[in-house]
Structure formats: structure tokens, C-alpha cells
Image (cartoon, rainbow, N blue to C red):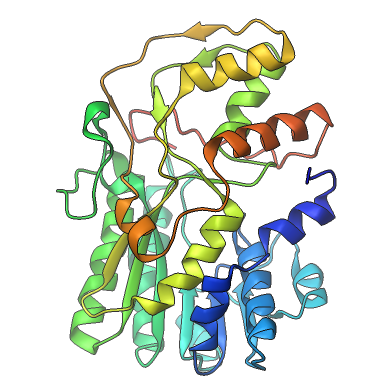
Length: 339
């Protein structure tokens, strides 16, 4: 079924899988989402609510953020309670309700160049505050594939046990985030999972949206980062909930992405052929890119419902219809680690 409206899109993004429902049915107590106001947070929070409802559980779902751009009314309309909080303020965090299940989504990427101090505070200092406050909880924490740095395209993507080689202060601060979660997981015995995500796609944003928009608007496409992974955000949401079955101390780490290794050139040529448009490339591919291997994810959490080809088709159809975009490019093509 085609996705023609944002209401339909939000319904699809928040539709839980049977595995997600099974995972939340085993949870005891409320679910707290920290940093819920980001691109992925609202649909994930709604999926948690829908999965709990499907499992017949009355646990609360609570979304926490500053909500500087709004979004509270939408969440509340879908059964998600909201709390305004500056997570860097220890007093604010201390006043948050206890919750045995925490999803940590907060972080800073765009605008990090030139604002490095706040980037480190958000990405590396804040996890310590959260772990101390919720040391009796189970925590699912989002990270990024940027902690790996680039790897040979022929190798099939970085794996969870590969050495980490972050480039730039954003990626280094994200490694700092993982190290803080790892430290407190070990010292306080917190069951924890770390999800290295790249890249979620939600028709209104994502790498595929970036590329399709350039082709649609006859803009040049940079081949500096010639290969990428992506995953339908609805699948990323569902696999996140399945992660609650794999908590550990020290943390269990998994790459959260699709299994396909996609070529920027080939994807853009596919869009161009569909629209009978020319596509202009600048630069050239190299033999290394920011890529993650999703084998562990597929084996332990499940395979995405939406394959890359279907996701490409959805993005193209959305742009053809003039579907709204968030205007938040991923800057995935950056090879210098500056965002």
C-alpha cells in the first residue's frame, strides 16, 4: 500500500512487529524515553505505546525532552505522557519519575563543529548523569556507526567487535558516550544495550531523501562517500524494542541498519531513470566508506520488514507527490568528521 499522507506515514512508522510486542510484553513497569523530541523519538514512543496496548499492559510511556520545537500535544494525543526537562541539569533529572526501562536517544551532531564543548557535554557527560539517576533501570542507548570511521567497501561493513577509529570531535564524543555507558554498566551493574544506528530513513529525511531530492532538483551529487547503509525508521523502531531481550553488563552492542550495502551512484541513477532526469556527479568514489555490517542485528533482533528497493520506491513516490520534508540533511557524505 502506498504511503500518501503524513498520518499514514506516522501510522506505518509506529506499527509494532510481533517481535516488538513480545519484547515489551516481558517488561515490568514504565518506559521512559529521554530525548524523545528528535526525528526518531515520537514514532518510537508511539510504537512503545501501541506495543504495550497490544500486549494488554497498562504501563506508562513517558517522553522527556526540552520540547523547544513543540511536539508535546502530538505525543499526548497518542497516549504518551510528556515531561519538559533539561537533561544536563542534574536537579531536573533527579525529579524525573523512576522507570525500570529507559531508552536514551539524546545527543548532539549537527552544529557540533564550532560548538565542541556542548557536543562533548551532551554526548559524553550526560550519559553519566543518566546512569547515576537510573542505576536501577535497564537502558537501551543509541549510538552511531560513526564511531568506527571508514572501512574498506570490500570488507562488507564494520562489525561490532572491530577496533573503533572515530574521526572528528562528534564521532569521538560518541565514543565517549559509549565508554561512559560501559563504565557505569560495569560499576553499577546496569543491564544495557548500545545501538549503533546508521541511517534511519523516514520519507521526510534520511540519506535516500537527500539523494533523491538532489536528483529531483537537478543538483550535483557528491560521491565522496560512495556507499552507505540505511534502514526504514519503522524497522529501526521495532528492532529497538526487540533489543530489550538482549541487555547485558557490560553492554551488548549491535549495529542497527539494513543488510544492503548501497551505492550512491547506482541509487541516484535509479531515481534519474524513474524520473527521466539527468544526474550530475562530482568527485569520485573511494574504496572506503562509513559502512556497518548488520549480521548480528539480523540474527538476534530480526531482519527489517522493508528492503532497500522498497524503501527507494517509497522515497521516490513521496517526493513525486510533493510530500513534506523536514529540511534536515544527514550530511552523510562528510569524510572529515565535521557536522
